[in-house]
Every structure is written in C-alpha cells, then in structure tokens.
Length: 573
Image 1: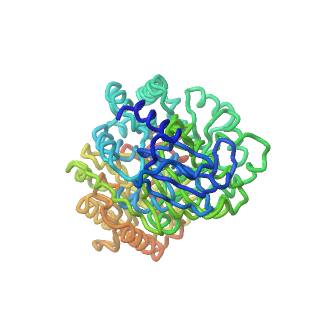
Image 2 (image 1 turned 180 degrees about the horizontal axis):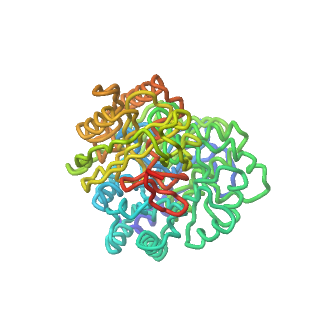
Image 3 (image 1 turned 45 degrees about the vertical axis):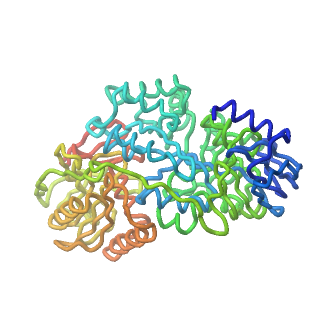
C-alpha cells in the first residue's frame, strides 16, 4: 500500500468509517509533547499505525478488532536506544530477545567494529540482516577514526561511502573522535569529506567529544557535529546543551554518568535536547538489568521527573535523528510502538508493541527473531602472520604505557633493569591480525598481571590483536590459540590455556547463548584476578589500548602512538 493511501485509511479509521485492527483502551497516556499523563485514553490502531488517540473507547467493530485493556496503566511510546554498540560479544538474535523485555522498539547502533575489520561489505550485510526483525534497527556508518592511516586501510572510497549513506536504515556517520577531525593529511581530509557528504544528505553527524571544552569544543562543533555521549560532569552537559548538541547522558557498561551529572536536572533550562543512552551493554549487565531499563530505573530513583526521563528515550531521540514523523510519540499517523507500565514512577514493562504487533507480554518475549547471516570471510579475520617476538635486554631506558585508571594512560620512561622502576611492568604486543604483517612489543605498567598472558581481538578502532604478558611462551600460546578459535579472548600460562572466550564473527561476536557468554567472560576475569589483576573490567582495559578514544599513550603494530600529536614512538628512549 502506498504511503498516502495508507494514511487515507488511517483518516477513515479516525473518523469512525473503518474499524481499527486493534484497540488499546483504559490507559493513562503519556503525551511526549505536553508532558501530560492523561487518564482514560484509548489508542486505535490500523495497519501497524496509530489512527486515533483520545477518550473514545467505542470505535466501529466488525468482530475482528483485537482488544487490549490497559486497566489504568501508563501507555508510553516504545523506547529508542540512541547510541549503542549492539555487536558487543553476543549474537544479535540473543540481544534482541533480551532487549524486547526492556521496552525498546528502536535501536540506533554504531558499526565501526565490523567496518574497520571487514570494510564496506560488512556494512551491507548488517543492513540486510536488520530487515524482518521484531524491532526497528538503524545504524550509523563507521567514520574509521583510528590512531594511524595504516589502521584505516578498509575505509571506503568516496563513492562507496555515499552509496552506503543513502541506505534508509543509515541515519548518518557514527561517533567521530574529536581529535581526528583536526588531523592533517589523508586521515583528516577523508573524515571531513565524509562529514560533508553526510550533511549534504541531511543526515546526522554523531560526536565523541571526550575531553573537549571551550574553544576546542566549539571548533569541533563547527564541523556540523550534532550529538555527544561523552560529557561526564554537570558543566560538560550544560556546555553541550548551550551549543545546541543533542546531549546524551551515558548509563551503560563502559561508564555510568547519571549520578555524576544529576545536578543538571535542577537547572531551570530546556531539556528537549537531553537524551539517555547506554553506549553499549555487556552480556552480564544485559541479563541483570536489561537495555535502558536499568538506566531508567536509576534515573527515576535519583529524582528525575518521569515525564523528563521518558522524553529522553522517546521524542528527543526521534527528533534528533529526524524520525519523529514515524516514532517517538503516541499520536495519529505514527507507528504503533506502545509500551505499558504500571505507573509513571514504576518502570516495569508489562506489554510491548512494535508496528502494532505485540512482542512482549506476561513477562516473556513472544516475537521470533530472524537469524543473522554472515558470509564465510567474516568468520576468518584472524590472519596473523608469523612474527617472532623480539628479545629484550634487561637494562636500559624504555618507554612504557602506564595506567592512570583502568582506561586512561600516560607515557612514562623507566629503567627496565631497575627492579623498583620496572615493578608491575609487563609486555604488551600489538600484531596486525588481518594478514598484512607487522607487530610491535612495548611495555605496560600498572595492570597487575603476575603470571601468563591475555590477548584479545575485540580491540576498539584497530586491526590489531593485542596481547599482554609476563613471558614470551605465554604470549605465543595466546596468539596461537586466538588464531585457532578465530578470535575472542584467551588467557594462558606457559603452554596451557587457562580460560577463553571464542568470538569467531569478525573476532568480535560469539554464537553462544548469552548466559554461556556471561559465564565464560566471568571465568576469564576470575583467572586474571587470581593472577594479580585487581582492575575493574580488566578485559576492557586490554581492548582500549589501541583506540584513540581515550588518552594518552596507545599502541599499534607500528609502535606506540602519543595521542596529542599522533607521533609514532619507539620503545627505546
């Protein structure tokens, strides 16, 4: 049915000339535009869309209309996850089954993990797999913001990028690390050109402004960046709102910011550009809290007014991505994405509907997910070449990555032969894993590992496998095993593999059930803890060592990279 013909039918339903397919009655409807909770409301639905919203509970009925009695409970628009990484260790079918219970009916996801390893072809597979799922899935294109040009070899050409950008499921270009936008040469020029294409098509440029403030933030904003999920203080949130950003408060597995920025809700300002986002949920937290469900509960507990909390995950997101003509509100002409909760203060989904179809009811999902298809070459992305680990002398001054927190690092110089200076210092090895060759061994200080080695292919923004280790034998065992299982995490001592997590799809995704994934990851962390690592989320620390997302000293297969000037640095000083 053509769009205007479908809307003509909706009009006839609203006029009472055609019976609706479904009637939701006796609900307290949350109006996202006026922030009202309006009692004794009904919603008439036809062909998956809303035809009428109001107090009339008696539309014409030809005997086929499905009736849902909300029994006074609150009717919300389906939640919209505005910024996340759904390709986070588990398969998408597993994620969708658990996401549905949170009340999410639309997800906008980043795709850089696939893009940086498998290039434009992987983005096409992702888009096709989004079709036919029980919830609505959109994506942003990877901006390919790596540390060095050698890590961006899978970036598309201008023509390829434009072709991908025109996909209706693509809402724009994904999070752009603010430092990369100012780079000279090929890296910066390509990125700025991609941004120009995106703006010309009226699509979104998503930001990542961690650490940017004052003139630097304004210079970054001038390129057309419209959102940022990185503010971690009240002042940073306010600064971004004042610059017109769609400002996302992150409450997910990487960081939780609600408590730190809660003072912003006491300001007498307009919050219609404030959004609540996860930035990704790991398997354990997904099983425990759901997607956005835990974040909304914490927001309400902190005293965020319910009407504001629900705007932050519905209409605000829809307007940011220019989707408000379809989703984000319960109004005539919008998609029938409806969520039923007991009361404004009690966020506990009882029923979830997407496109007029019930997908969750009575505590369980009732919609079937479509199986994702990935080609064989996406199961074969760990193609490391034989690369002998260099032997080190036990004396001399060397450059090391020193952990300041579990994520932030600094550049330090130590005498590797001095037992006090080299205390808690282990090897860190970056190895090109997509078949081009090349590797670099440096040192990491402050991780705490006392025995063995741990390696990962789930590293952010890089084509490198990264391995931390106390000895060469353990590192070699880890590399060999990661090749065998086609990616994931491995912890080994000497020649023995102690624990592992297999992620064969692009070296990022497991095909196992979510509960199994959670247990395997927990065993890895326990193995590291037993052998000296006391950091929170030690696997995450490993994964970010090659990313420009977090300062200050990083590692690639070409050498150390100092983030402030992108200079490649050797081991020896």
